[in-house]
Length: 184
Image (tube, rainbow, N blue to C red; front, side, top):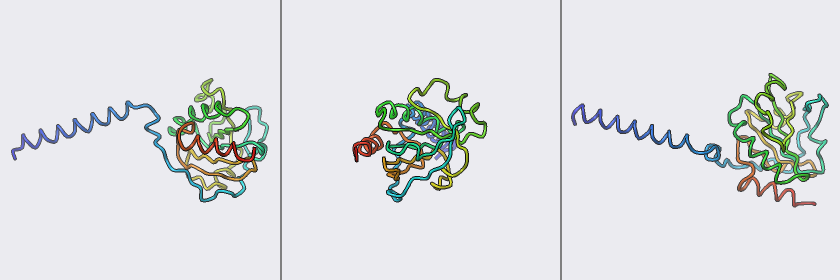
């Protein structure tokens, strides 16, 4: 095979790879997040009760929401996947008002300024919180963000997900709905 033929094959291969990348990057965020599997290994254990604060500085705990189904979402505004999944968390909260407490707990070192720079008025069904300590990440063994934990009305863990997901769709939404329906 001549050098020109090899170069042509290499160029065609590179062009095909570039086109595939351009097409896949043009897809909506849903396809980027995929559908990572939920982890049930620690289901039934009591939820970690770390401290976080609301915008007024009032300390809150996961246990403050006992009696409701809770989805704790550990995130940061500097985390791309965290930012991509936030709209789905907002839609999930909107789908189950009064039944589900979605708690987006930020670990932004820049505090409320960093949160506000990202948050704005984008997520009307969510209330952001700021972590007061590392009890949530340490207690859950979260090695990265985002990290989410679904907690039942009795304060026990149902499942966890150490990645971003479209929480308002498929198996994720179904599990939330099932958890809400249980023990009403």
